[in-house]
Image (cartoon, rainbow, N blue to C red; front, side, top):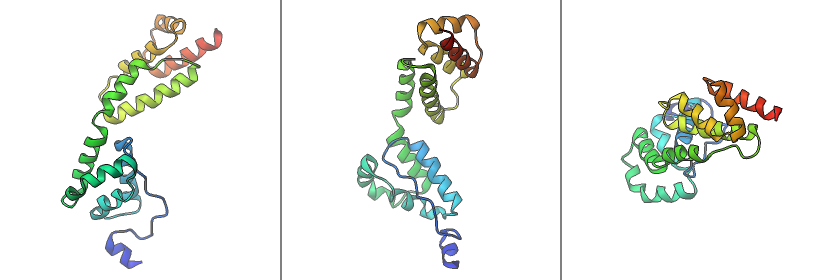
Length: 171
């Protein structure tokens, strides 16, 4: 038991699986990995080594190409390298998806898809003005619902979602 504490592996052996990383959503993986390290009191000197043990698919292949660099990287530098490689176009791609998202089946389905997309964008930048999300949401509604919503001039996304669902029910 004392040996684990000295080594920085925490008082108890980790009982949860470490998050896998295949190359998708590096910000989320970094958050989950950091939470794991904090939860199990893993010493920072082990973070990079533990993290790369759980890379697979495209991330695993990329890892082979930067293996020599890893020896000299601390956790912050490694995270920066990782997010640069796997997140470099993701933010732009997510913003472009807002121009294409629209209500195709039900209001609830559209709200769920929009919410997921919005949360992904916010994870890259929390400086996006809420009115931009509100505008994107309204633009994606079916035209007959959009017209009714725009006349009401809702000021926030939650109200707009509620109004859209109510309008859908009355049609």
